[in-house]
Image 1: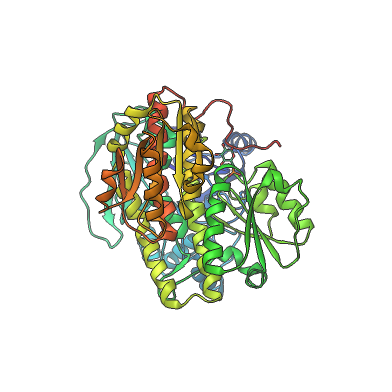
Image 2: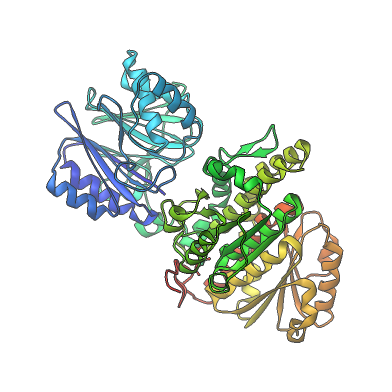
Length: 610
Ligand code: G6P
């Protein structure tokens, strides 16, 4: 995700800010920029790509000053080029702003400001905020007051830092939903999105809470709420080391990413749910909406984890939109000469947006006249650029090779897409409202499941020496069984197979003995009774049963060796919950086997070759 660092002090400003940015590189980014204030002017340098590109530009165009802010951007709105990189400036080039998060109502703000004569230079949501600050500043407010006034009009999430050339001894920063920390030094102060950016200079920090704003000066800091109430902050001493900080305090990126899911699922839904109408909306699909509403057949193609999410998409779309859906591995699709007609749509799903087979499948479908839409995480990636239209996960960079948070975001978006298309067809408003309301409870439910870590670790301790695992599920949870098995084999190197539970009788049942742990996804839904019979079949052969079950299901305890309970939800939404314990189980088993979970052997995060 994006990174923020700001500095006010006597040290040479550019090296301090660049060092801070480099410490934030691990978070993933696609462009970087820096602004300093000197002699009443705003010195802005930004560049696409790596921080080394920015450094090279700064060598050609040196800037100085004793106050400045810098940013690494991970694109959400607008392609990752120099123009869209932060900082963003106002019309008069007095105010500069950096921002992490998403301004949901930027469209409305932008339209209004354009009507007042503001000139926009970028495609970003952030630029709307800098012009809004300008608007208040021009009306006679101080810089701090102008930032405060603007923030009260903003919907969405932010961690921001801003400077103004008329007040060169001040950085104003604020937080709502995106972390921000103030570093306190001797005659110098810092602001950053995470402590790794400033840890080399000071270990004394104060963490902002949501809804707080700080005015950073050379000789001190003043924290207030955005509604202007003074706040007394604690100053803390940072004790943990840099490597751990980068992983958000967790031992591995994979665990950090698993734990991030309550917020990444929320971010996938942010600004896209219409609770009163029981509808979803996607700005990115506007141009293809008409074609999408008229399609007669949907094809979905992807690889790996994204392919598993696609299967869930098939179940969702067929059940609620009632049009035929086919899912195919991208590597097969590209060479098979599939039948595509021009009233067909192809959905390509790719976290990285760079997978070679998925890209080739997309090109093939486009050549054959399909409307192609993308579901990607990496903004500006090749797939995102080549599709006719698309939606982004907004899940932040996924660094662990085994995909976790991207999966739940992909399924969330496929659910929203289903809602959108179904409501345009025959789903009632009441049904739509019911689904939207349930979706809004998912982040809290995921959080609850994540709280079962210790329990899941104990199960991992019992089975980490097993050589084989079987994962079984039915309906919406059959693809989850595949994904659970994939997670385990990717990072622990244990052989694991996922199967539709009833299909077990046609082969895998031969493998079952008392050495075979079998993971059942046995939530209480329309296939519950059937899956209970499948559990009995395994037990009759002395297989060891680990069941993922619905809270309150006491009966299952009699049949399973271990039960991991998840909160109740609608059947169509269960995969977003049932996959969480399977990710954790794979993680802890791999750790107990001493495997490198973030970089498993032989695997690549982004497979850009055939
Ligand atoms: C690789 C990764 C997987 C990923 C797959 C598809 O195999 O290791 O985690 O699911 O590629 O990647 P994509 O970026 O297209 O979703």
